Amino acid sequence: MVEAIRTGTYPPGSTLPSEPRLAAELGVSRTALREALILLQEDGVISVRRGVGRTVSHHLPPRGFEFLKPVERLLGEGGQAVIVPLARTREEPTDFSTQHLVLPAHGEVRFWESVIEVGGLPACLTQEWASDETLTELLPDAVAAFDGPGGNTSSLLGLLLDAGRGLPLTGSSTIVATTLGRQRGAQLGRPADTPGVLVTQVVRLDRTPLLAAKHMLPPGAPALPVWQAR
Image (cartoon, one colour):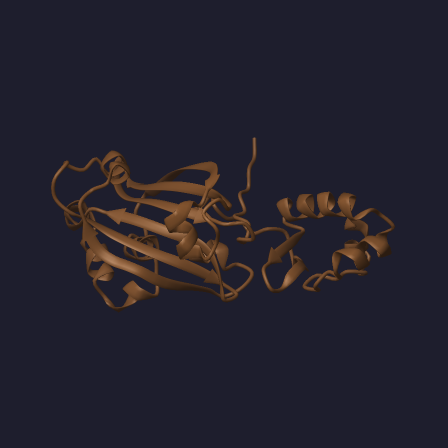
């Protein structure tokens, strides 16, 4: 398969044939083909999108999740990503936001919830929390940006990174396999028992946490590239 891509049988940017036709062209079983396609997708050689099919990548996966980037930019590397705002509000701290933002038990925290669509299809449900009190002290430009016109077309992280250009912002994440559940499944248009990947993220200035987030990726979402080295 990789050799066929290298020799131009399936050139970069082209859509691969259907599974039956591709299996026939390569002379392999459909079971073996599916396993190979999964590995190629994991390696970034091909991408998969609902309603489009499998497409040969134009280049190696770009440097990605090891850098602090808005998730909409990471998912939109190969196509246009659109933010669909679901909530732009303040709420009482949850266990998650209290733990990661070191918040008092009482009070309010800014909460944004968005669906990120890529190619017109839901690719990620993003939930973000930030403490206005902390940001007003350390990065007041971010609070102004949150309340500005860009709030409905960007994630909290996107606006935070723009406001904090030049500052030593760092992040940490965990990645776990789970299921969407009833509410998140409804928001993504999937059954509750659909498997998904949950990425949590905390962004800090020095040692002070500024933002906490959860990113739920359903099956078929664009890959999040990560470059690694010894």
